[in-house]
Length: 294
Ligand SMILES: [Zn+2]
Ligand SMILES: [Zn+2]
Ligand SMILES: [Zn+2]
Image (cartoon, rainbow, N blue to C red):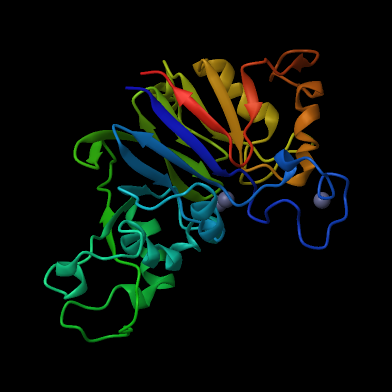
């Protein structure tokens, strides 16, 4: 069965438009130039898998009609990837469209929890940031008696290896470095999601061969950045692993207009001249839906 990917947000940590910036991209009338913080939803075998849960999650869930999430895969603990988690408290209710079955209403049965996966260091950031969601087993410690996000955090053992989510869907973690911070990307069948990275070991690049769709974080084309891939650096990975289609995410306003992306050219290290970005490499935009062949 084909998988479906919905891009919920494709912008860098500031989002586009950027607060206080009046540049032509931030003022663009093209909806494809408006970028919420980075997140995507993958539908596979009738299950919904969310990549990250940033500060725009509430609007993203409303825009994409999300009413349940079978698993959340966290890339890393930066605010633009985790800050929306408080809004996950609505999801168990949304599952029932806010009309709980009697046994749940009476509290005879517990509300379903959302399973979330990440590196221990990522999950520890979540535990710290959302301390009130994780009361100690003896019910001491800071907690709140109202509506709370119902989350089960799974620390992925290192070295990372294949694990299963949502009743048996295999996920292959991919390790990369976001400057000095270890991050994870994830491969599910012939799809991979990898954002917020600067460097990646050859052994991890090998996990990206044979993809139908690669989603890759790429900040901008005009100058390198200390913790994100530029267009030149991203294309080096693309040229190596040759996915059938690549969608870039996590762009800043520096990338220019969506409509002009294919006017940009990129450089290959050690090669003179510049090259056109191939037509199977595109900027993703918020709301874009992509079918992925199995
Ligand atoms: Zn980010
Ligand atoms: Zn701007
Ligand atoms: Zn980051």
